[in-house]
Length: 165
Image (cartoon, rainbow, N blue to C red; front, side, top):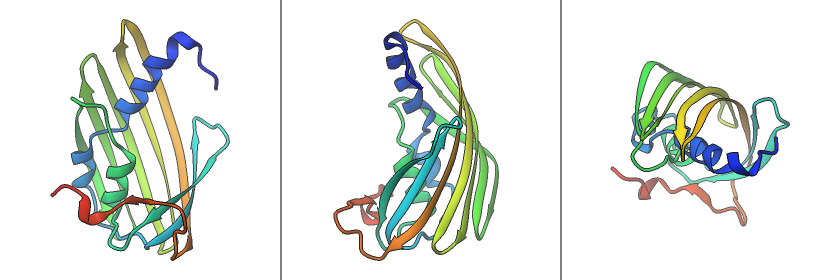
């Protein structure tokens, strides 16, 4: 979907905002993710999936992954409710608020086995940015599969020892 020029700054801000707060995700889970190169696919609002690659280092957990892939805008405060965690996944609702903007969402993450994970998220963002109103819904489907224990030229997504305590 190509956005008109005047909507791009507001939508980009909203996308950064709805990503959530890093401390929020650090409290969620400790499911291990196999070290090495992973092939990822993310589809937003029914668009064709975008393929990518991620490198996870030894000791990377689900919380590391969620923290790293959900960096937020400064000044955003988030909370988690209705959290259900199992040995193979986690589901939760999150609510985030910031200056003139808020989001509510639901995330389901499934670690199918040591070499596959998938999930969905659905988030609604409302508010205003730069005087422009925002009322958008973002539905994501994502999946990943393990490719190799060697990452080659792909830099690690997160280095567990460097995360804040």
